[in-house]
Image (cartoon, rainbow, N blue to C red):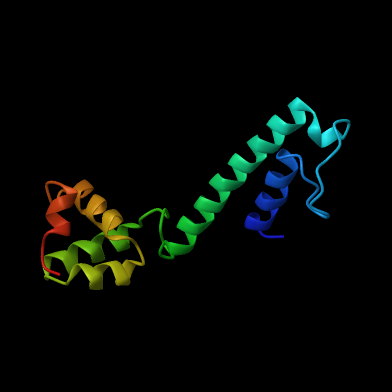
Length: 121
């Protein structure tokens, strides 16, 4: 079951509707109790956050969030000093432009992240 469908089912229950039939739930139905309704709404919020995180993760490069090795640092410095384009550097390390900029700043090769972003393209 995907997140979007689970969210849809929970929202219907929280609104007092049987997701199988579309009928309004009776007042005595357990899903129509205040604590359960609040729990269903909370579950929807959690699923929305998970859905957003999943979408962000799908758009990130392969090495996003992974630690840097000394060899990678050395290669990054070399490529930067040789004037490789930002795109080539990002592709080489499979990281975002922000990650590359942060690493170069940490290594003392640039003053701030904007310096990398604004250089050759």
